[in-house]
Length: 355
Image 1 (cartoon, rainbow, N blue to C red):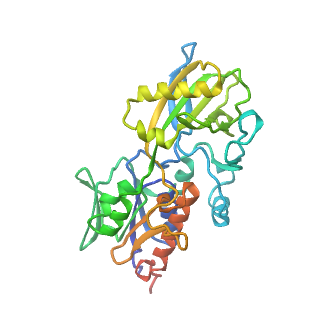
Image 2 (cartoon, one colour; image 1 turned 120 degrees about the horizontal axis):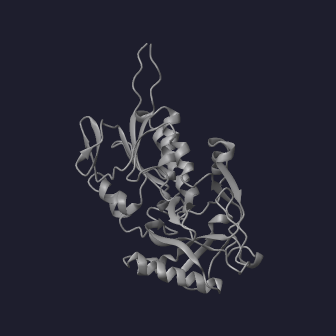
Image 3 (cartoon, rainbow, N blue to C red; image 1 turned 180 degrees about the vertical axis):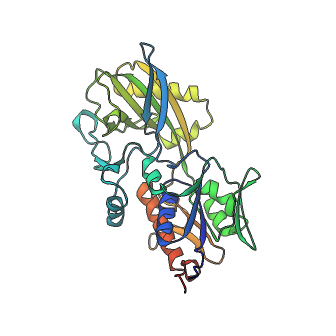
């Protein structure tokens, strides 16, 4: 019995879009490898571990969900995916209470929360994959034997029949420019929104009416959350674990400011919003250059939104939430649509065994 090898695909980017696309392709029989510049999977589904000394000099470790705090699932297909693709204890639902017992602005409703941390969603999807971490791809090139992937002069072993880019548009554009200039021209101007994020541990506030999450009406802060109010996260009766996201416009205005200056501004804004002093024990800030896509993005239209790019002749695809459907759900929808396009193409359907 002779078996023709299935197509080899490399997925660049291990956030939810890359992880979901890689999982779907592998389940269909494709030979998939994953590459990411980070040390592990997750992308903006991120949890940061901080080590610090408390007031008694004890070494402590605390985790903060400093990327997407949680996510909605409105698409029935996405809901089905969440229910069937993960173990029962991998996801919990969370309905955060707003300030003074009210819902947060915008009524965010019930949210899905990966457990025990945000990246676990992507780690589970990629649990049995060949993955290369800390590999910041800066060039993709196609030769007679297929695609090759390079980072800082190093070449990923092997050749690939197809490349999937699951990256922010500013990072994808220079990689695809030599192969699909029209895609690069569409991706380059997509204004992904930056976001400064404050994470910190403080003594519990006297003000008990702040709830689990809220949106200040003005000032630098767009979202404020009690990380310790989330199911399955560390909680201590004498502590408040804060995560505060700055507004995109404020973040863009101050994107190159020193971290210490940004931290001081955000801590002061949080104190003003709470209306009482905050006794910080430890705090840091993180700069997301590509935190959120705009509401309308490259290729989007009201009649038939473009959810991905795929060139079967080249074996080149792009997916991600920047195509117009924001958030984790939008990233998954884009990845699923790209997978379906690749699966439909005869040239990229893994052949059956032949005797």
